[in-house]
Length: 315
Ligand code: SF4
Image (cartoon, rainbow, N blue to C red):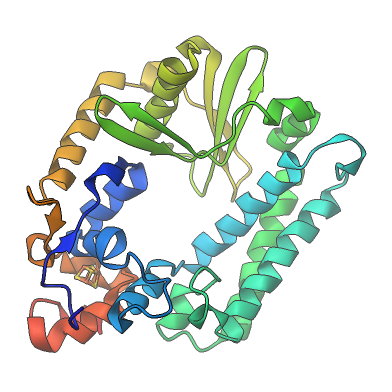
C-alpha cells in the first residue's frame, strides 16, 4: 500500500450497514468517513502498512467527555446485566467500583501509551493532540464520573431499574442488526429490557433533546422484527448530567420521514462505491471546517504537503 490511499480500495458492500453514527460521520466529513469505514480496515494486524495502523489508532480516539460517558454507561450495563440471584450487587458502591476499575484501566493506558500496542485500549483525543496537564484532566474526569453516578443512584430512573427482575434483562441483548428493505440497520441502545409485555430502550446522553430518528428506528425494529406494537414500545432518555429521565412521546415521531432520511443517506453513501465494489479516496469530499474536532487530523496533516487540500487546522 502506498503512503496515501489514492489507489481505490475494495469495499465490502455486502457488509454495508446503516447507523446514525455512520450517517453523522458522513455529514461531518466524507474523507473522515472514508478513513473510518474503509482505509483503516485491517489496521489491527501487526504487519499491515504503517498508514493503515495509524488510521486504525486514530479511529479509536475518544474525547474525554465520550470516555466519561462510556465508563458511565458500560458500568451501569454491567451492574444491571450481571443481575442474577445472590451475586447481584445491592449497593451503589458496587457501581462506583465498576466505574473506577474502568477509569483506572483507561488512565493507565493513556499514561503508559498502551494503546500503541493495542489500539482498542483507551486513547484520548485531548492528550493525543497536545493536552499536557494530565493530572488536571484525569482529576476532572473522575470528578465528573463520580458526580454522574451520585446523581444516577439518587434518581427515579435508578430506583425503577433496581426493581426490575433479573429476567427483564435476558430477552433482548443489544446491539441489534436488522434489515429494512435491502439495507441492514445497526442499533445500539445503552440499555434494553422487557416489562409488562413491552420493550424498553434507554439512551444515556448529555442532553434532554432526544434524536427522534433513533426513537423511530427502535419502534420500527420492535414492530418488524419482534412483532411488538408501537403502544408497547417505550423509548426513553436519561440525561447523565442532570438526572432528568424522559419518555419520548409517540406523537413527536414521524416514521415515514425517518425512513425517507435513511433511504436518502444510504443512497449517498452507496454512491461512493463503484460498480467494481471499490472506493476511491478522491471521491470523498473534504469538510475542512470540522478539522479541529477531527480524530484523523494527524493523518490528514501528513498528507497536506502532497495533496494540498487540507486546511491549516489539520496540523
Ligand atoms: S482532518 Fe479535516 S479534512 Fe481530514 S478527515 Fe478530518 S475533517 Fe476531514
